Image 1 (tube, helix red, strand yellow):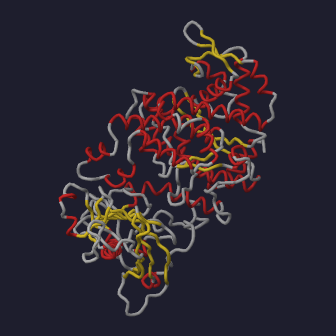
Image 2 (tube, helix red, strand yellow):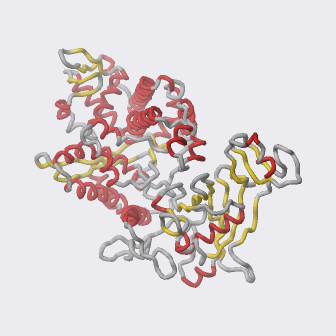
Image 3 (cartoon, helix red, strand yellow):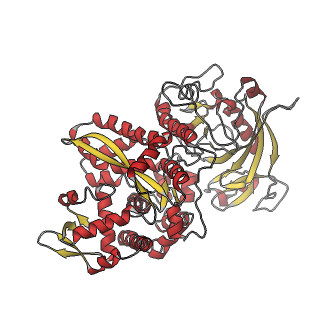
Length: 613
């Protein structure tokens, strides 16, 4: 598949793909047109990186469903599992102002890989010498030589091409009077003679070495975590990346477990310092995440298509613009803000072939085969309207306390074939509450509620669909024996402190949980909801919908607890007596205490919370 027109023709027919891309273009151009010339100049140099981040950001946070998932899935289904297509923007200027943004697709496969061709094109130019500010970094005046010959005209992409060429030994830099001259080496000729797969292997090795060098130069203490072998290892096995990051935080003196427990307590500054987040560590962490974005996620992701980064939040261009333009006088900082560390990533079909040699496919973010273009389109539409919906200061509530307009009543009113062509929203996956009003009131929702940090401790609770989130809170409160008189909140995205999906105690500054019924939430089977009780001590829970029953049991009072775990602790750790029941947990000594022992002077200054067994 080498014909770019054929690729474009196919992709434009896929409404989910074309809508996802044009949504970003329209959004950017609307914002761009409102800015002053100085701001426009900055944004014109950042738009490629903004689009890259959008391309890998979630459309549906629950499924980690991204535009990249859509493009690769539909293109692969049509043309074969070894083929991929990636959209890139073309910036068309009228004078000094962007006139329009267009997009084109490039096909990625081992025998036809754009990065290999671009590297060959660069080496050909370097045969007569190209001027560099520093080794591997071209002067802007040299960009025009590359403009028509590379897949994406962006300064970062050009720099990565040059740096990888330098690392592989295909270019050498000679000191000139006020700059450097990059010249192709005899080794470059050897590269041109290699086969397609071997060329990519050489590029990957150089990119890994470059990533390792750059990070270790800045953070010598992380030599073990970001060695060449370690980077190659977690490229092949993305799950191992999380363990590396935990190790990194530990070396920086940052205790992530304590952050989870103590975040949002009263003495904010003291808590952050106690877990290692002093000013120095915050700056170091920012630069580490930035360097991973610059040398790991973007090169191996967007440029080589070996991995697919995943940013879990729905991309908000307005927030991104505010972040960028807040540092308008410092272009380097502006650009750095666009490179952030993705929370996770997955292998692509090319990554499986080139990194794990196709032996053990490990991709985990595949879209089910029964979900097609139309269903994917609805995810794009839902995402586009999601941000607009939650930006409204006031939400209209219907007579029953439900959200009158979200999502189907306002955002997706029209059916397929209607004037705007958006179609009716298709929720996925799995079973949902029945849509008929009568069956709403007859349904029973079965939730399994686990202590977030000790999931062996759980309760199973049944509650009617006609009851509210506040009723569910009271059931959890009673079932776990929590201390009274504290605020609480539910987060439908399963992300703690996500204001966009928060329903909370009526006294909190949020959407009230007592005004929304469960059967209005359009929940999925196996959907998880984050629940936090007591904003100070922050008791966290995972609430999972495990079943929906269509009929109420007669003479049963809902909500009710139907099952619970068997307690592992039955006696006080200190007095070892079964006479007094366990009531407290000492976080400092990691022990369970009866009320008498909790009063001992030994625990006078300890952090003690209610025991949950």
